Image (cartoon, rainbow, N blue to C red):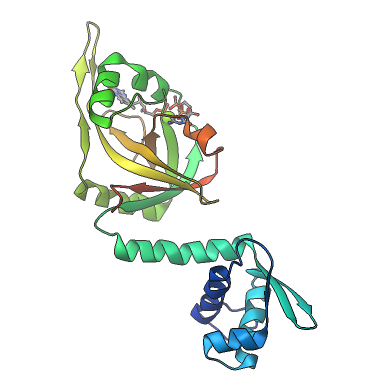
Length: 235
Ligand SMILES: Cc1cc2nc3c(=O)[nH]c(=O)nc-3n(C[C@H](O)[C@H](O)[C@H](O)COP(=O)(O)O)c2cc1C
Ligand SMILES: Nc1ccn([C@@H]2O[C@H](COP(=O)(O)OP(=O)(O)O)[C@@H](O)[C@H]2O)c(=O)n1
Ligand SMILES: [Mg+2]
């Protein structure tokens, strides 16, 4: 990442943003003095001031200078930048335990509701997942890199749902994995599962999620909202 322009933000600036967040900068306005910040960073006043300026130019921080210091507030974009760092650390320390897939909520063909409600599946969901799912599947349109990463899910411990038949026809098997859904606001729901039916009209870029509750209501989700689906057990 280039640090040559005024607004360039690199690891040094992110470190300042993290420090401000640790002091409560995400909760609201925070009063700081450049000299105290310089002390904490083990840098000169000039360096501390330059890093704050760069964060402000990149719209990651809002500032209001007063006589004895300045008021700062981390913006939504600043919070997202910190969250990006957090996700990377999570990937470093939790690689074996879960696979984080990212995408946007989308509407499907309205068939999920029918299949999830069938008694031959319902019995198995109650036995093997421990709950009666809300009738439907929350469909997530995966980003390209997540479509690729999806194959890593097969190294995790699955919950298998068997195929079955009634008088009219046969129904295909499906594979579930425990999952946590996280919205871009940081709201999470932990008790969900991904479900991959063997017979489906969707490609690998569509992830379907089931849960005991309606996720759209619980997490205030609408089509095109960004979500992270952390697949696998949390350590
Ligand atoms: C538990 C479960 C079992 C399914 N079994 C079948 C099946 O036997 N045959 C089939 O054509 N589709 C089956 N489907 C796939 C649905 O037809 C559909 O492709 C998918 O669930 C997406 O629905 P949606 O777009 O309405 O969310 C199944 C889906 C679920 C959730
Ligand atoms: N646990 C769940 C399951 C489905 N849903 C939603 O419930 C509705 C019915 O699910 P569905 O699979 O039949 O419909 P589509 O995914 O085809 O739109 C959809 O709007 C899903 O996004 C949810 O919010 N939470
Ligand atoms: Mg669905």
